[in-house]
Image (cartoon, rainbow, N blue to C red; front, side, top):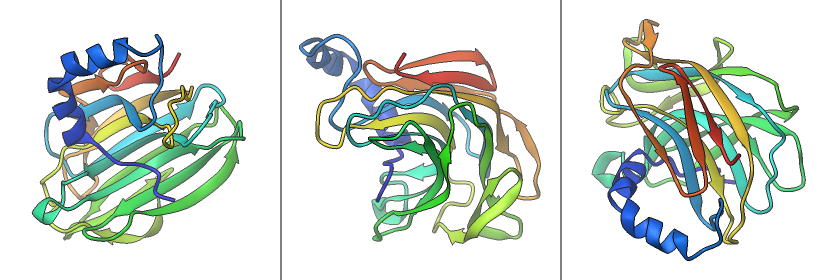
Length: 230
């Protein structure tokens, strides 16, 4: 199942439509809710070669329809060659009927369906995981997923990605076509971006926060935040 539609471009473009969106949202019931995708997170203002964070689910997800997620990643809708979809992300996912979470990664390559890979399942709220995506040293456009500092899965080629993308860290809700309020709360700490493929990292610096109607982000420092519906 395709979990996410990474949305750096969509989120920033959506900010330009905030007034119109707010007017439409005001016609709905007060509070969170979406039949499509809704996000709350941060996007780096500078390009880099990767992103890392420790993510902790602070509460059990309440997923009425679709899914929820919390992830770090690069790329997005229309970010690949010729405006194709291309991304790599890793983080937590939650689905209806379960109070536990999964750890996953997902890759989308041009003109192919996104590929969702479950790494761990049945994780309890409060379980932290340090996750990252980073370009591989000496292999421009080739990326890897890291969990706890160890590589997971095979290297992934993302065409045209070298020094091309600004990474993001975000929570996400998808209503699955039904207007629902999926509730969740995640903490991101130790946010860092890769300054080289050799493993040099620095703290998350200049970044733009974004959130859709009903979802919140609370910045705790330059390298940490809490986000979700709460």
